[in-house]
Image (cartoon, rainbow, N blue to C red; front, side, top):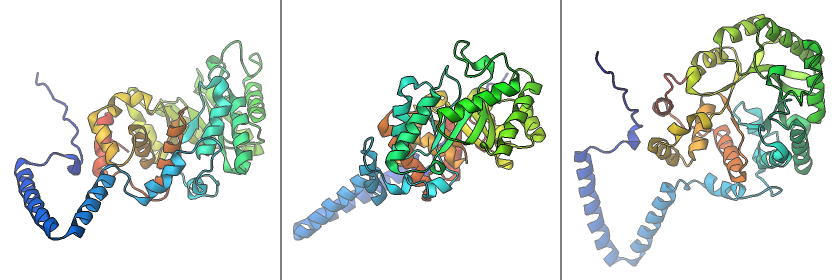
Length: 379
């Protein structure tokens, strides 16, 4: 049997090594230029200063800090909690808020640090927050405390913060900390969970309510969804979604049968699900926001490669923000659960750059990045 070798991803043309003949010609040109510059420097002291300036310009560009945008943002990236932050990314009426391009701040596993970290994230510029009514993995009340504290300091209205939480079925709850009556009907469980979420998050409505996962039987999933729909009818919830739904038929059937269609699909972005190619295509065709979690963790091997580092450096990004930029370029919404203040500012920075019109990837680079990750097609 013939062995089929997987073709190694080819980098964009400007990252590929030069052919030997081209390299030799370039070397000769550089030598001629060096001799000419040396002669000129002996006849004019001012040209020496110009050459030094030229070298400094080159260093600045190659360091990825050449644009005035980067210099202006440097102060913002170095600010801490409570410091002044660029108003163009924190006032809620900015282009970032109006745009569909964003990163969700994920709040799982932060426990007693949740309030502090959410406050820090909002102060850094995050405006979209994801949580769940699931004490096993989330401190939903801490999220409420964190965003309201930051909003008070920054003068933000509730409408300038996107709050998304989840109803977690009994199978996903800690038996000792279920946030609703586990003996009640499914409808009552969902209603009690919503009431608890509104109280925890200190709000009278949710921007999105997400079903944490399909239930064991599709009929149960649909029953929960019908209760969800009454919340939209009453104005307590704006849009609905579902998470951890990897079966294409289940999601499509729910979409077809729902009176209020799912507007959010939040899934782990990894190779085991073939990166949800078919689901993501369905979302794109039907105006559904695809949200990705485990975006970095599940792809850390690819992001640790030399190729990923070179591509990131060529754009003034870290490999983490490179991945987020890739997802947002696809039209998706990645989650970032970082607990590092500097990384929060870097995440906000890449959002702002995209919203302001910067394009990080051409067609060839999108294909290259997809191949690095092992995605058969990047749609």
